Image 1 (cartoon, protein in one colour):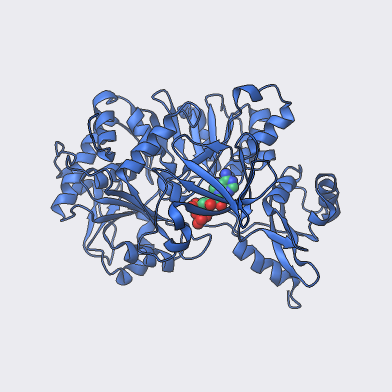
Image 2 (tube, helix red, strand yellow):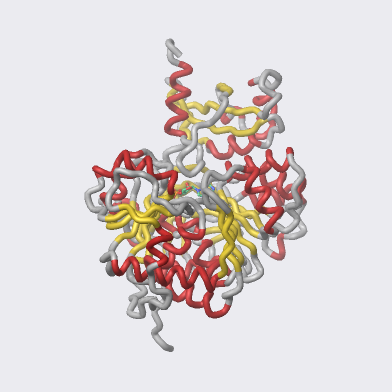
Length: 539
Ligand code: ADP
């Protein structure tokens, strides 16, 4: 067969040729834009010519600090399209982490949203390698700024060449993108995505038994474009000619609900906290969500109660998926097999709340200190992954040695696997609670608590215990109106029939909000501190 390198630029070329009329609907700070792939393709070409003029060449890192919108999408294709590397930066990280990431990646140019400018003004003197800044603004005038040189995106584009060619000498194993982990677990670690990985991962998103993304979809990624490339959806959707709805800066659950209704969104993707917020909104407003054929949920465990609410109350199909920055990210997805259809409704939900089975193309192994664990749904071990869209190292980081030893990515996630090959994430290695020599899964208790009607959010953390080593404490946020009505005893009573006695939390603490990471996951590190403070004599 022919040896044809897989390249990110070719995905956009395909969209230009075959889907020039299909639309990208994009919310920016000031307005809603509607452009088709014909226009987006030309703008991408203009941008490649500008990057070239600004001296960006093969392998150079092009940083972005931006929300989900069409300009960000154009950089997604322009940077790798001319052989450079798209580096999406998580705007919600601390300024220290952002400085670290930009310097570590050695970004030469930064594309930033208008509302991120103050942050960059604050830190730009620490950015050792950045030579130019581009503001992605709708306004004719550039904002006043101390940063130099500062360009306007649209002004630059107006002088660009709309027929500039996508690079044809791409080696598919060359870097196309990079992204740093969201620092839930320590200093951010850089992952480099090759052209080949991104293209193969896009194929995977199109498979009927994964996300089945197709031309007929209207895709609204809520997961940020700075979080593992919005889970790769912009690449796949462009290639397949799906309509894309990009919800823009500082979106609210209201905007998401309105967009679903107005643009007839068929597929959307995000972390559980987003869907908890959307549920609240759906309960308050009157929205038509009947166009939705799939809500993809991943990033942290999707509580059973959440899946049920979407499916039973709103008849919205809900798919639980699992992955990480290191896995581009799709690794597993939860769907019932054809012969699993006659189990009870409750069992179906139980099954689908698990993280599912491996996506074709990948390999997995689950290993404990005694070797590979049996697929019996009980034995726990760490999940190891291998495959063409799994990273094999962190960018210039000696933490690679442990995480990628023996040719496998060690996910740091503790799982069980049942006879069907369905994995269930029990916990992150460091969040498991060790009580009296046995492990307690914080995720399982959290999910059980979140299925209790009055509860909005729950997170379970360990506190040190003299006798048992560690004991679980439940941290709970109640729905509005339940604040002084639901008690610790109510929650423990609800849990009692579901768990062995020693799994039950020693205490239930009520919070107004659970601290969250930059990508909306429960931040257990911070929560443990807050719990400790409540128990300290001063607290
Ligand atoms: P960070 O490690 O900084 O949180 P990532 O976004 O790469 O950054 O997170 C990947 C991790 O998120 C996985 O290793 C796993 O612990 C967790 N995760 C992702 N999807 C799920 C899921 N469906 N259920 C449970 N945990 C998940």
